[in-house]
Image (cartoon, rainbow over all chains, first blue to last red):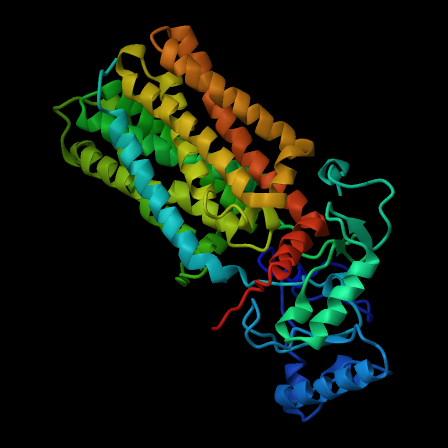
Length: 150
Length: 359
């Protein structure tokens, strides 16, 4: 949860679902599965199917990118100069996402981080720093024993 | 959002989605920059925002769902690790009272740590579940393993100490075995202790929590030196003055390094250092500095006095605890204010240095 640069992942809160039954997996953090069960039955995710304006679209990501680029060009030609895609760069700080957005302003205006980074990107350096600190601690303790005992 | 973090700009009258953060930008400049960018190369179109925007001030990243048991564990884990080092050194240098103090304190602090972790996880079985996998990219998984390797050695060393308190050299059988296992266990506990104190820094830093992640270079050094200060302080409180020389040096050295490392950390954190000076975290960090500096002075100057020794040692332990709780709190606060997520990222984009990452 605290590692998600978008603040998306959350724990499921308790209570009852629409049918009055206690929710499953209370307190557990889960990710969107793109409605895996529906995909197996050749259907689109529920959110995409339910969206009345078809703002949520599901499909092959390369094809979606192409369509999105065309849409951005069209919007910009129509004078909406702030139109841009967010999350579509496969080499951004999180190494690309499977979902992206067409925005009409800076990402942070929508509550998105403008330059998100996957936290594990710096993990090798963190590991090195922590190892250095651990060795320094060992050395510091050893040095403490040089000199008078009392 | 705490008002103190907005010292650089207007706070109360901040408009809903935009706040000035100290740059001399205006709406015009924004639009101009964007137009220029699009005409040129694609990269430049991401350039400079003079203001920081957010969705009605709502947070972007989520604060860790951790309670104060985790902050307490940051302290007790460090205390356990430092105490094991103190005990191992005392064992090798023939300081039995200091050795006993160190081993027993290590077990006590370890027991507290385990209780805090199990409380955080919800039930004990989840700790065993953590041991069913080994995930090097998860500090929580690696930390569980580090603790599980260190713990039995620390426990065996403390058990040996307890048996030594009630038996003498003539003990036979299992009691004899526990007695003689004291030295190898204690030395292994000392060798495996430093990762216990250091990994918790990675546990915090390897998150999107702005004031933790931005501190990743110095935080391990702050934490291990804070651990040495606390455990040296523990030795000053509990061991007789005539065997506590190493504890005093460990305490003073740890305290000085902690103060320096913390200072360096704040310098390299940029805007995300602000939460360390605001609200409860600010109070805790200030208290940590005063207690740590006073304790170090007491260790250096008044160590031969039993009363001053106890006082200084207690101050150092309290100082270390304040540092851990302060860093913990500051991180949670930094996650609740979009400023600390947006501004450093905007600054990167402004410099033309968006983060690139290839799996």
